[in-house]
Image (cartoon, rainbow, N blue to C red; front, side):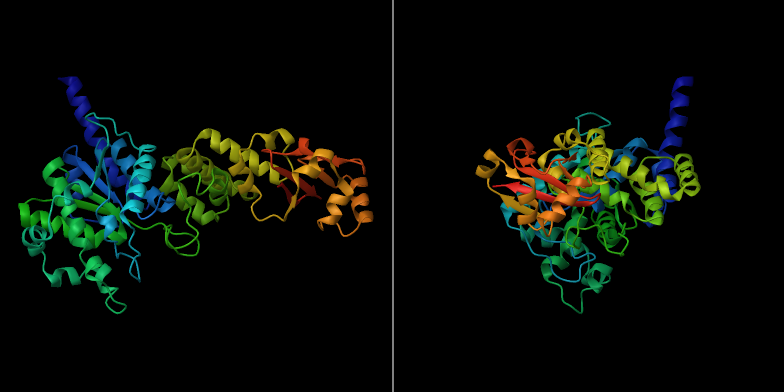
Length: 439
C-alpha cells in the first residue's frame, strides 16, 4: 500500500511537470483551459501529426518529435500520426500560396521514409508505455465523400471555418476548397483517435491552433466529449523564417539530404542568443545544466561553449555519438589539425560536404598511373600563376596533398594519393583548398 502511494505521488508529480517544462523552455504558446489539470489527473495519450510533404523531416519537425519524447518521459503515451490522407490535401496554415500536390507514389514513398525517421526517436514497441504510430489514410480510405459531408462536415459552419487564421490570411490571395477543407479533415483525425484510442490530447505548432480547435469542437459536437490541446511557438532561424521544407535552406534529419557534418556546422554557427534558445528547445538538458553552460560561455565567449554544447547534443540525438565525433574531426581538418588518416576515416558524403564549394579540377585516371608532376599540375589548373610561384610555395612548405606536406619539386601525384578512390585534396597555405577529381 505504501509503495503504491509513493508511486502515485511520484507519477502525479512527474506528469504535472510536462506543462511546467514546456513553459520554462519557452515552448508553451497556447492551451485549452484546464489542459494542465487534465494532465495532472491521469495518464493520457497525446498526438501530433506529421504531413509527408517531403522525403524527410526537418529540424522544424524535430520540435514536435522532441515534444512527444518529453510527453513520454512525463509518464504519458505519445501518438505519432503520419498524414497519408492529409498529405494529399495540403495544409494552408502559414502559407501564402497553394501547395503543390504530390502524386500517390511520391506521397507513399514519403510516408514510409517518415515512419522510419520517427522510429529513430520514439519507441513503437507494442506495449502499454510504447508510442503508437498511425496513418490517417487507413481510416479516410473507408469514407466516401457523401458520408463525410453528411456525417462530419455538417457539424462545422462555414462561418466558423472562415474565422480561422489559416483561412483568413489567404482570402486576398485565394484559397481552394481543397485547402479550405483541411481543418475539417484534420479535425476528424482527432475525432477518430478520440474514439479508437481514447486519445484526448493534441499538441502542435502555433500555426496549427485553428486545425486543432476544429478537432476539439468536432469532438464536442459529434461525441459530446471534452478534448484538450496545447501548442508551442514555431522555432525560427536567425532571419525569422521557419525551419520548413518549402522555405529554402532546409536542414533535414536524413543524413543523405543534410550530412551530419553540415548538420553539426549549422548549430555550431548560430548566434549566442539563438544557441541559448535552441538549447532549451532541442535538448533534454535541465535548467541547472543550461545555467552552468551559460556561465561557462560568459567567462570565455570566444570558446563558444553554448554552440559547442548545442551542436554536440543535437547532432548526437539526431545522428549518433559516432557521427558527432566524425563531424568534430572533419571540422579540425578544415582548421589545419587533420591528418591523412582523418581524411581516410571520412566517407564520401562527409568528405564532399566538408569541401563543398572549394575550387575543383579534373584529371584523367590514366595520367595518374604514371603520375603527374606537382609543378605542372598546380600551374596547368591555375592553382599557381607560374612554375616559379609553385616552386617557392614548395620551398616554403606551403603545399600539402591530403594533409601531407610536399617537400620536393619532383613529387608525382598518383593513384596512391586518391581518397575514396576518386579525390585528392590539395591545400595551398593554411586555408585554401582545391579538390582534384579523377575521371
